[in-house]
Length: 565
View 1 (cartoon, one colour):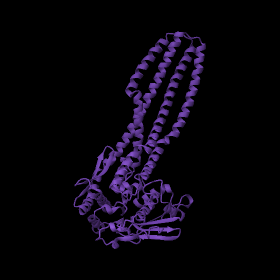
View 2: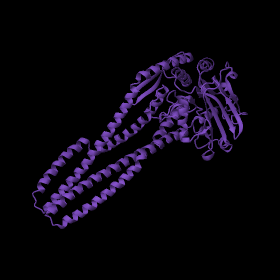
View 3: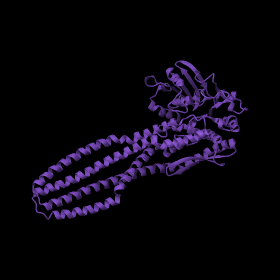
View 4: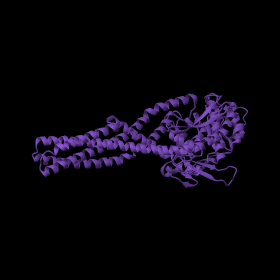
């Protein structure tokens, strides 16, 4: 899919309509930054990229949010977008050279509820289905994972992670198994197992936490050995009890009492198990709540500060990154705690059953006390009851251990089957990476005279993609060049293998690349790739030998901003 056009309307009045073409598409800021009175900001060159991203499923808040503080926003832009019902229409086209090739028209506005506009090909789409619809239209895929937004993350390089990382383009808290699903999809391997694999990791972790808790009391071996011993004790007490000559009714009542006590202990242990599981789930949820404000705050702050030192004019704020992270954590919390209602119901039912047994125990105990049994026999019965209670506790611990081990084993088995299924594709994966490297090494060689190499490495959590530079770690400028080489190579690779992909890359802050590489990209590399390279740039940051008019699709300035306000 290529970008065909982007239209911005104020109600029914046209503000701008930008047409895109193959090759280089420059969004030029004419501000003279050499004049210290001019900043080169806020004319809308990056906003254009974000409007495209908005049409592709972003929430659009980064269009008007203050770049430094999440709580502050550009009130003028925010009011302009909402009070004037700004409508953005993006048209994608399968082939710009074929007039009747497939098109996708996406229409959005910034309003909510009944005033909200969200359409694909003139059909209204519910918000919760928007990303999946785009995934079906663009990638012909209906599986849940990876998500549409994860797949296209590398095509829209205006966010912090995407400006400093080539393949690790998702949120810093993204788990390894999520990345694996994205990487395999990029390589043309669309498996309907990624969502299940991520759920299995969560379920396995709950069982591992439960076993850690159980181990603090007794190991499974200790429980089994204790059960053998308590059974021997019960057998000895039963033998001694038979030596007493008591009336038949008394014996029946005693036996009934023993069974009830055993049941009480078993049900009590079951209730304890249910409450323990609920406690574990709540602890997991609490851990996620703490992660919202503690663990990842420091990690993300360090990452943000590092990125800020490398990219002073970074567009995404620390607070926005933290907010995105927190949103993901809340989704995890929602999944983990979904079992709570059924647990509460089972706890309530178990408590009712326990109360009924306790009532019966009280009735039988009072009846036996009135029968005037010998003191020695009562002591024996008490000893037997305690033994049965201990047995019930041990049996429940054993059942809980064995149930958790069985569940953990099933999760491990299914994870292994999934991993084995993915590993069976190793030859295909390595072959495709090798095919990708033909393009990657060629473009990187043209840019820097060295060959970058992509590798698919497998560890205990799955596959990951890594890039090796023969001359060590690249600097900031060369990192941008590495990204350009990767993005352009991927489009060539996808076309070669017939993999559905976006044939455009949106790139911000390309000024960090050396003039030689910028010239090479603009005049030599992109024209040989069936793609669109959309760049937001300051005119006076471009090399002087570049004929800007040849590539320019939009010119902006302090007197002619994107929204014309």
